[in-house]
Length: 385
Image 1: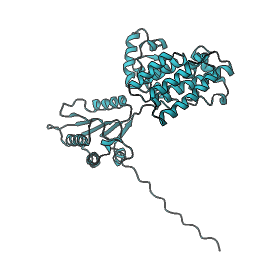
Image 2 (image 1 turned 90 degrees about the vertical axis):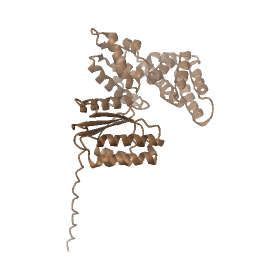
Image 3 (image 1 turned 180 degrees about the vertical axis):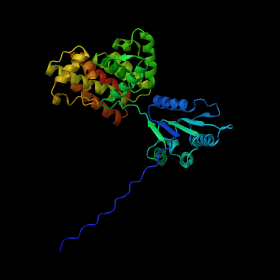
Image 4 (image 1 turned 120 degrees about the horizontal axis):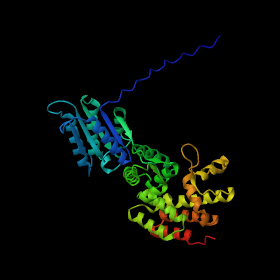
């Protein structure tokens, strides 16, 4: 008797997602400058031609949950009050700081208020009313974000994670786009140096490009590394970069001064150790190894990059990589210029000292400034011969 044929289970029909509301726009992320700019551009576009009654901006800064509830209440009132003479209305809740994973954002009062706002948005705003929300962080685990994401047009702008290899690429893409608006031209070396000094502070990009624009004048549009060194101010990322430079040059007094500067500004000792000291010691050791084993003697970035590209893949696999899978060569090139100041064994001991310092910072109550100073003194006062 032939086996009975299995019945095919009926296919489930795909459920079409509801379209997002065309009049609700959300801008969020850790990159405050880009969030603010994108929201401002949207508000300017949507409110063009409207008077003060048709274009309303509400400050979203709350000190506590009661403030947050009051802000949401004013937002609801603005959304539900149309201009007396009719026409369109744009409401911008600007810089909301009570939607993230914090005490204010997690309070029942705040959550209840956000639920009320969500209820109005889900019912659907009149087509002539446009709502714009800008916020630093919105907790993605909460129902508010999940429902808002299904409903609104959301754009996220986050700062690059400078602890991950290849973060410079994100900054360089942003700088290139902003520089082209001013008709400034960056060669690769200049672009990478600019990214190193700016770090993740995109808010600083525009003002530094403005300074370069004025400094160069209309006749000069090509940005050279020397222009950047003269003009661009140090951000937090720039100070981190300068600590690495001072380590490479064995400039102990400069390193100690910059560490003290960052600690005074509230930077954590562990952040300084892992964000600046350890990466630079590792880069110096990698550069020393390349110079010794492959006799690389490049004195400019282009030739160094070419020599690095000729090496077998397995010989560069341990180096930091960019998104395209090629070595992140510029930091290694800078380190190669100063690697002669150190012996390989010194650098290996330096990495061990960094590991010990990390353990002391997180497991003991020793003064953090003293721990960092001991590491760099041990690294930079040993004989370089």
